[in-house]
Length: 96
Image 1 (tube, rainbow, N blue to C red):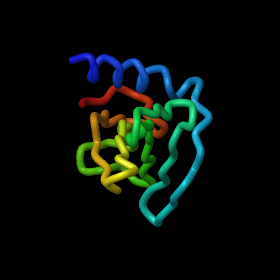
Image 2 (image 1 turned 180 degrees about the vertical axis):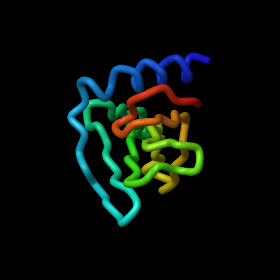
Image 3 (image 1 turned 90 degrees about the horizontal axis):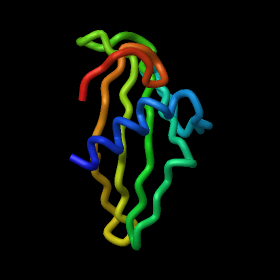
Image 4 (image 1 turned 120 degrees about the horizontal axis):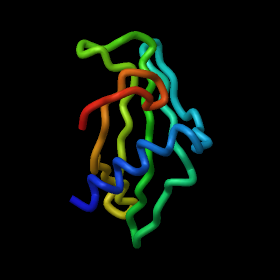
């Protein structure tokens, strides 16, 4: 529950203050991360990512915010939580 509350706080405020850094672009989407959200915990790193679509998805979404965890030692990653938004940069009402 604490993770969901943290993710919601980050995602609701992040688009307003974030210095998003573009790290990948394709025909369909553009991926950004916010260096200010990187948290270091031993061998793990957490970071907030936003993926902006160039066209609406099946459910009308234009972006996805995700909180990623990277295990640098084991070279693994996983999504800790996410939010689907109706506008780019995580704007608009969405769902978890």
